[in-house]
Length: 216
Image (cartoon, rainbow, N blue to C red; front, side):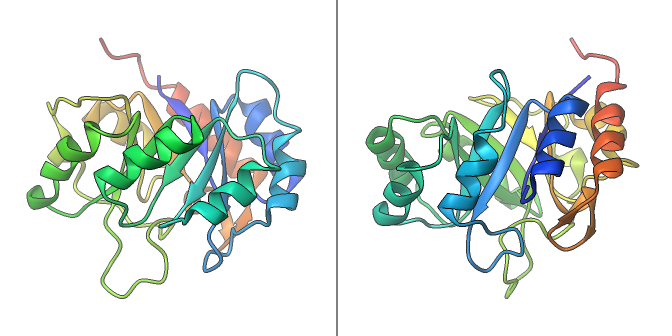
């Protein structure tokens, strides 16, 4: 059984579908290049509908202090997700400045990328282990790409972590069984088109993740 984060939500009905299905985290994107980008005002109206017990995550890509301030002034977020090239020092700085837990996304394509998990684990409260975006990609995540999950078999982490990258209702159970992930993150895998969430796919994904026997 794995908890689920549904990221890139943009409409009230899809926030409701995620919450009703049992998602533990809901994510809102603040990155203009993304088809899932929200203004602070739009995100605030969605975040206020999220009940207690479900964590509201804000996704940022190399944010400056002004953007963080503008969003946090109106959006009640519980966790900040950094999905750019932020250094461990910048992660620690944002955590100290905002007083919020920080999750750092780390892109993985091969064994050479695994050392970064240790470095960022020293600074962040949680890691998001994602597929590394291809060179020249417009988006650092949400590309529907997976990596070789076997790279994570038996790996120890300094902090809690969640698995992302190319997950769908059809493969999430296999990914959880193979990696031992206790939390999984999905965005494009529950969409009918880029940025367009599908309530049926959201429900199917959460059910599939929940159906995996709990690991020791």
